[in-house]
Amino acid sequence: MNSAHLGVLFILGIGVFGGILGARIFQRLQIPQVVGYIVIGLLIGESGLQMVRYTDIMMLEPLNFFALGIIGFLVGGELKIDAFRKYASQFTAILLGEGLFAFFLVAVPITVLLYMVLHNMALAVAGGVVFGAIASATDPASTVDVLWETRSRGILTTSIIAIVALDDALAMVLYGLGTSLAKLLAGGSGETGSQLLRVVGELFGSLALGALFALLLIGLLRWISDHERSTALAVGLILLLISFAVFGGLDVILAAMTLGFITANAAPNRSRKLFSTMRAFSMPIYVLFFVFVGARLSFHAMPLWLLGIVVLYVVGRTAGKMLGAYSGARLTKAAPVVRKYLGVGLFAQGGVAIGLSIMAGHQLDAIRISPSLTLGDAIIFAVTVTTLLLQVLGPPLVKWAVGKAGEAGRDITDQDIIAQWAVKDAMISSVPPFHEDQALHDAVQALTTNDWVVYPVIDGHGHLTGTLSLAALRQVLPDPASWSWLLVADIMSPAAEVLEMDTPLEKALQLMQQVNADQLPVIRTKEDPQPMGMLESNYVRKMVIEELIRRQDPLAPGQPTPPPQTTAT
Image 1 (tube, rainbow, N blue to C red):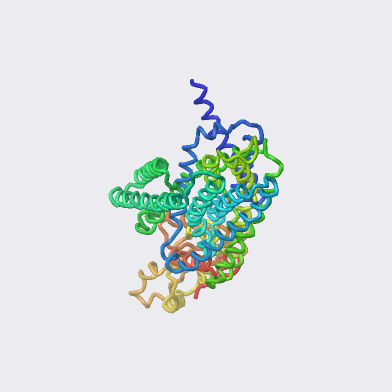
Image 2 (cartoon, rainbow, N blue to C red):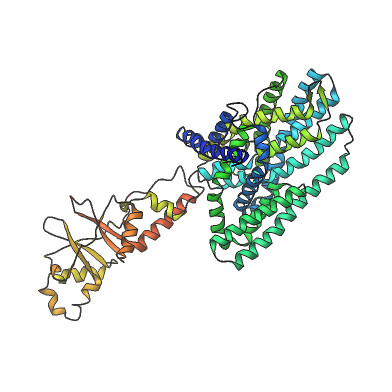
């Protein structure tokens, strides 16, 4: 077999296997899994064991584009048009605030440092504005990955998703202007007007391409009801979208995000299961993407003064994101949790910044700032290192922010609640038991004055022996004279199936479905079979829906916990 094929398979295998293993270790340390992916990449990449080389990563560049396309599609699916209508002015103010503050607080100090090193104001300003433009971008992949991992839901979560999805466009505009200005200042041939027109064309072209493919996908979802085939078609369309975007020099993430956004909002019911499947399908692609981010980081051949740029970049970008987000949120009177924590959730930097730095490397490669270093090389080196630092710091801070805002664990389904609860959390504990030697006349009076259709029956020791139902009572209702001499034991049914109160609710509901029962009696334990109540399927659904609403309420305090034992009303 061709050794090159073995090399590719080995890189993919070690990337996925090592990434999952690293994620598991870091999760046990209460650190987001994306950090584990990057650390494994460092270990096997350029700065570690060099099992994966930079040339290997470049050979697998199409996989990175695929990962960015999947990420964009899923991020777009998270954005709901109702939220944009409600918070449009707020998102715009925050976006401009965090992007422009980061730009200026990075560009100005780096310009000063470069001037002190190079003694050339034109080169210093050129480098500063490009660094500032790249600093405005936020990585949507690792940020949204943490939000999915923590099952977050609420206004802060919505704001974070919206901002990280939208500031790619702002970063591209600033980058286009910055590189054009850098060429002009450094004596190149860049023209600001034509450069700006090119960037605007890329933005609108990306949006138009994503919208066109969204219309095609929605039509296919209406035509093909089979879920497996529709998922395969969606993957094929995303691959085609990515290829057209790359060929046309458009933004892959923005085009794919538009595809996901329009699909999720124009066909919410038809696309819901598709997005769920795509999220599960994307797992190994996510892993490889972030492992390669770590693997490509190289600390060799970096000039010492570039470390000063790294420090200024991280500090300035951090301060700019926090101050800008806070200013925009306060100006638009956003919710307190948005003002306090949104900036903290925008630290991560990843694929977009690296992509812009590579583009800058190509466009500014002719501008030398020393005999052995070009401006493009300096940007790639510095952004690579800052990406590592911010990807390690960013995801834990996103997790901290949504936790402090009380939004972690709120993006849940009814099945999540059922999986967490036991029978005792959803049973009706106020159903009064009948004694087996009790006169049927007394039981009839109780049955006609209460709402329950099945009642537990106990013996002289208080142990469950059976159940009495309205269905069984119908047999003797036409003969009232028999009520005085018949006993409950004469018409009760044996308790063939019972539930212990600590039985998982999911298992209990499965048993009820198997035996075709809407109600089953609940006992303390098999060793102590005292009746504790009844589990009734309709009542369980009501309790689960109420708990789902309670947990998703953004005003509900603290982390969600199962409710105490419930009594009927």
